[in-house]
Amino acid sequence: MFSKGLRKEAQENLENKISKYELVAQKNKNDINYLYLKRTNLKKQLDNSMTLINEFRNTPRDFDFKVSKIQINMKRYQGILDAAEKQYKNDITTAGGAVAAGIATGVGVAALAPGAAMAIATTFGTASTGAAISTLSGAAATNAALAWLGGGSLAAGGAGIAGGEAFLALAGPLGWAIGGAGLAAGGLIANGKNKKAAEEMNRKAAKVQAEIRKQQAINVEVGKMIELTQEDTKDLTNRIGKIHGFSRNYLVLDNQQKQLLMAFVNNVQASSEHLNMVLGKDQKFVKSN
Image (cartoon, rainbow, N blue to C red; front, top):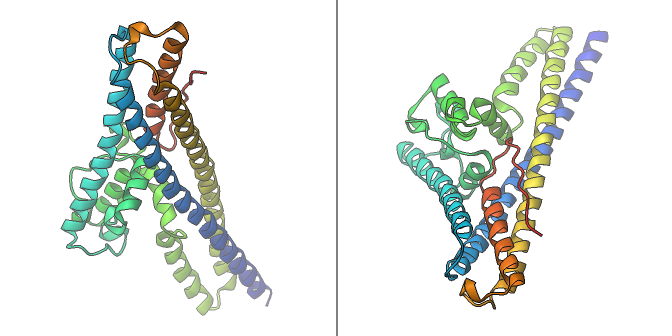
């Protein structure tokens, strides 16, 4: 009877942990999609900013150098979107339009909607695996999917498999890890081994708790990225309004106008850098006042 009580307590604890995990993971899913939406708005404002900046002539060399840096950053972000779209289409085509059933059969972006794929790509980064994920199987598929979703192999400068695992954890309550454990525990219960079943479920509950902490950490970082993106968009909108009435000839601008224009260019550059930030990489940029 005592062992049965331990098993029941352990089962309730595990179920509570999984429920909490699902809530945290779902919040992260929503926030990542929201971040992508806000970054789409920022990109539009950056495009507007570049259109305005390119109208100015007779600008100093330092001005032109910063503009070239902004162009590079914008191309880099577009490259992430293009890579994600290409990988998504490749996976869908290779899978015959079917959604992969699980990681062992090649889960990649084939299991995602296009918008979600873009959200993941711009949050976690992307890299080519050298083959469509859905063409792989077993451990190769697992590693390829994790590496792609995590931003590529560590050798390529990406977050690697660890980063991919951080994303895949969003897909559900550790289904590929907990599912098997649940079956094992169920078998122990059926055989009357309540104590061992309780121990098994307690081990899994501890693992879920560790994953909860990871998801909470992700949530904090994504929240900061959302806040920064919103601030960037608002800042550029205000500065565009101030700069729009200036003469497009840099030489006839007064000192205050030149300072405002240069501050605008500096902030456009910083915002274009922020646009390329990915989860887990600590990048800090200073904006002009």
